[in-house]
Image (cartoon, rainbow, N blue to C red):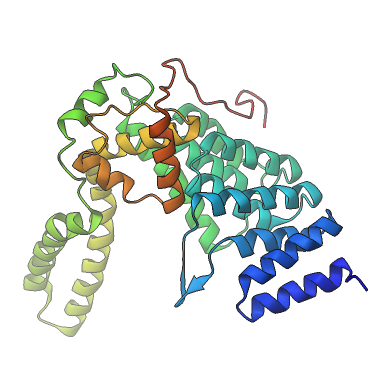
Length: 333
C-alpha cells in the first residue's frame, strides 16, 4: 500500500533527525510529487538542500544548492504568503548567496504587499539601495519607515537596527554627496582611483582600531588618570570616561575609515552591479589585483561561483543601465 504524503513527510523528518539529509530530501521530493501544496515539504526541500551545521558552524551553500533552495521557498510563499521564515530565507539567498539585488528588491516589495505594516522588508530594501548608491530613494523610504503606517516593534534590537540603517544612509550620502559612484560608467573618475589603488588592500577595522582609536583613548585615559585617579571614586570616573571615549571616538573614526576605504567600497559596489545584472563592468587590470582579491574574499562560495560564470560570459553591462525600483517613491505614504 502506497504511503500518503503525510506519512512520507514524517519519514523525511525521521531521516533528518537521524542525520540522513539525502534520504530526507528525497522523501520530501516524493511528498511534493504527490501533493504540490505541501508547504512543510517544500520548506524541507529548501533546508535539506542547504548544508547542515558541522561542529556547531553553518556551512555555506554552493551556487546549485542556493538556487535549488530559492526555488523551493518561492513555492512556499506562493502557497502560503504568510510564511515569514520562507520570506527571510529567500531574501538571504538572493542577497548573500546569489547577489541578485534587483530581484531581492522585488522580493521584499512582494512581501510588503502581503504585510504593508511590517518593518523588515523596508529595512532590507534600504540596505540594498545603500549598497547600490540610490540615496534619494533611501531618503524617501526612510520617511515611509517612520510613518504611522509602519508598526515598529518596541524592542532594543529592532530600534538599534533601524537607527543603524539610518546612520548608514547618512554616512553613505555624506561620503558620496557630490560623487556617487556608478560602476556601469567606465569613464567615471572613481574607476581611475580604483585603478591606482588596485595593489593596496583595504584597511581592516581591527587594524584601524588598534593603530588609531586605541592610542587616542589610551592617551586621553592616561591624562584623565593623572588628574582624577588619586581616589577610588576618581578611578571609577576615569574607567567610565574611557568607555565613553572609546565608543565616541570609534563612532567618529568610522567615517574616516569609510573614506580611507572608499576605493574598496566602490569596487564592492561594482561587484554588486555585476551580480545584479549578470554582466561585467570591472576592468581586466583590476580583476585579479590585490584589491579585487581582498574584496571578493568576503563573498560567499555560491556568489564567487556566480561571479566566475559572469566573468567567463564576458558580456559587458550597458552604460545606460539603471536599477529598476519596484515601488513608486513619489507615492504618498
